[in-house]
Length: 315
Image 1 (cartoon, rainbow, N blue to C red):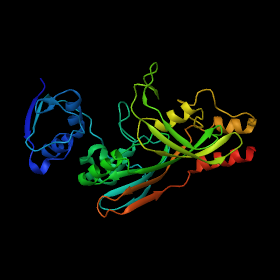
Image 2 (spheres, one colour; image 1 turned 90 degrees about the vertical axis):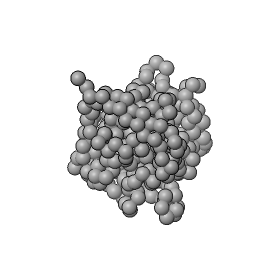
Image 3 (cartoon, helix red, strand yellow; image 1 turned 135 degrees about the vertical axis):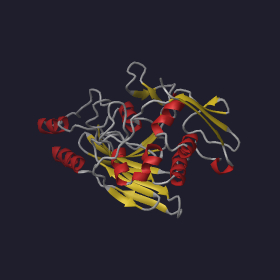
Image 4 (cartoon, rainbow, N blue to C red; image 1 turned 180 degrees about the horizontal axis):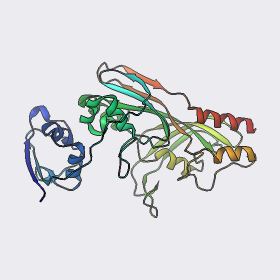
């Protein structure tokens, strides 16, 4: 028979302004973050009798109640995974993620993720939501990610993302040549027929992508992209919608794999490029502690540089 869990927390003034999942985790450290997320998802955790969301900000005097059955939940385990740390201080880690690395553990994919490597790098990160990762990249997108090392920094960076003050720049190799740069302001939500994909749909959430053309490459282009919002697969969906899919994107690339006039040799190289040619190249944010304007850069990885050179030679 499952053990019953009945807990109550009266929110103190010192806890006002914090997220509910953080307060519960700190008050009851014997329960994992996965337990807390499960309680919230299944409606076993309420605030003043109302269902709570993980990001709910608490106010003094509110009552958190937990009425649940204890169950075995897999904990995220530290793993010796090589992490390319390009900057680290007492508050923030900036990492340069390679392609073919999942950021967060998920169903059927509990090991071998960036999160597992971060917990191994710094065990205290296990006490933060998602080991301090405040945003994410797709498995096959390479580039820069911010990681908070404490609660105060985590909340500050989340707020900067919400306020759209964080500047995130990406480089993408796409099929086709846009006449100029521009802004794509189209809502993104679940694809109406394929629920595993995202799409531009009227009922979707606001999504804004800015892009500029850095190089035109004989039927292909190198674009620089900045995000004002952070929807799932946003860049990939928006560029595909615009008619300039990212090279190597097996989900959103559609039938437009090559431009007219592409040599057989280049077609083979593009076919053998087994991930979307997308790289998070720059991060700019205000450091939560010293309030300095902080910018970090990452060069194009070797595989994208090699593909870029092959496209240039095609002309």
